[in-house]
Image 1: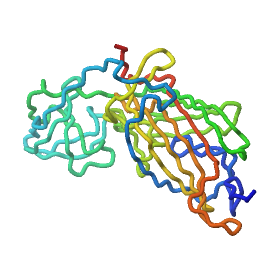
Image 2 (image 1 turned 180 degrees about the vertical axis):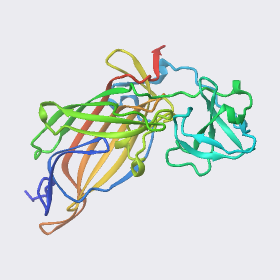
Image 3 (image 1 turned 90 degrees about the horizontal axis):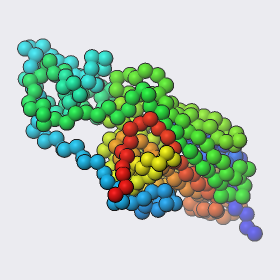
Image 4 (image 1 turned 120 degrees about the vertical axis):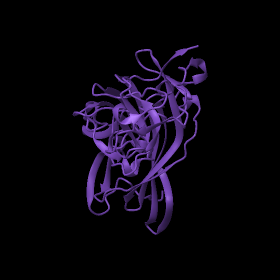
Length: 349
């Protein structure tokens, strides 16, 4: 039998890795030897609506459930005018004086309104010139005392999707399809909670993963997530589905329903197949293909499933290979089991 390149074989200068956590995504790797040079993801994404049985029957058709009545879309001509009598007005990152100042507005300047606070004392507006990186997109908040508002009854009240009491728990099942893996399967628990007081609109959400029977090392990571939009800050990994724990409000239309262990059913936005590739060095590339489901209200991760394959490009024992696959693969399934976050719960018709 002709020899094949071995992804478990050391190549030069090695780092032994049993669990690779990229910003919280579980990229498990048997007891594989990987190069010390950091891998650079090259993400691609091709969103679509997977069938309800993508997750082994866990996701049901949303047509069998009653969705809440959607909030009316705000008309684009609803505006406020800066009315300060000469001085510039502070634009803040959230509805309150405790939020950071992200810009200034001059008297007479007009802003389009997105929403208002529950007490009608703050207006979320777009778009803020010169806003800092603390701003969510280009929106900001103006106090009612510095503007001349329009008809506030036409403006929807903003929702604070997440707060400091946030906790969430996911269960993970992992399997290795290679004969060369020392660990063939393992389960894990991922727990998330807020690790410190919010800064501006951002919650520091710490995630901790603990593997059963110490199959792999315990690890942890932190995502900064906007309290109002529910969106995480992932920088260059924004389109990498393995990082998508907190996509935020407006992640997509509900196209499925998932029932939690407590019997409550959540409307979810499922998409995929998504793909991402990571160059591991030595001619090896790991290719991930998977599907995700997120809560339709907050965009929080509910389900994640992927298959990981090892591909080889290069020469080995006189043979030339181009993205050759020799059967080495891993699979992971992750599901939400409990959370304090108010999800988009639905009732069966």
